Amino acid sequence: MVDAFLEFMLGPMRSIGDVYFENQMIFNSIIVGGACLKIMNKRSSGSEPVEDTENM
Image (cartoon, rainbow, N blue to C red; front, side):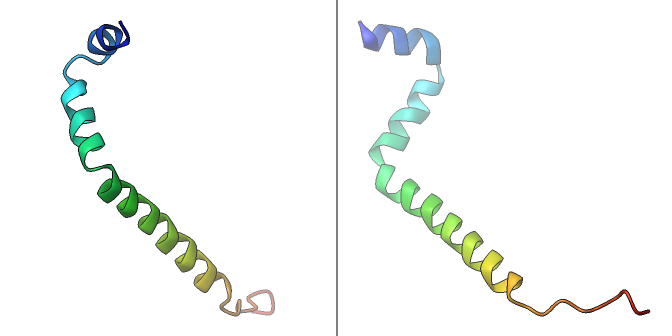
């Protein structure tokens, strides 16, 4: 019964979900790796000294 509801609600997107579930470990690793890189880049750019522009 749940399968019928999913088929009705998702329609053609169901095949994309099947591909995702088959390769879930790869996709999740890419997403988590991208998030970690973004966090690391934000931390490293935040530690740079800020120039004082008020005295100009």
